[in-house]
Length: 187
Image (tube, rainbow, N blue to C red; front, side, top):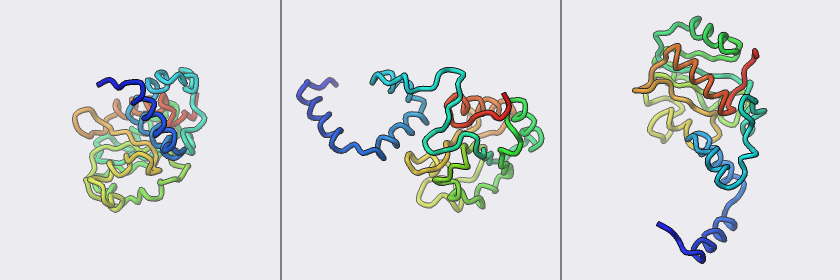
């Protein structure tokens, strides 16, 4: 569907009058979490705002990219193995909160991560849908993924369903670095 010029101008007027800074921030976070931020900024002529390749972002929103990384979900990969993988990829073991039992998610209060800059990222493996942080959402994960809700960025581990493996853990850490969610400790 293509609109006529007067319709586009009317739409632009409405957007400019109704668009506040909070809404713009939510849009940018949603574009970033869905992998469409680069394309969006290129389309509107603001791609110069993106960090250069290989350059770590100083901060994402009000978050501290050197903050805690929470890994939650049932894992056959042992904690010490995941920490060794993290070290191989330039991360200190002190950065991680590992909750590797299936039901840990139900007891963990993700509310403490909301609008808290010391938490940089949450990586999810297999977890129950229900939990203390679920509230009215369909699952704990979907609650944390709500755009503009103030939770740290979320990455789901696994390609066909949720699963924690050494390779998808390593890949997700690298992906989070490239998206500016986190920075490495050791270069």
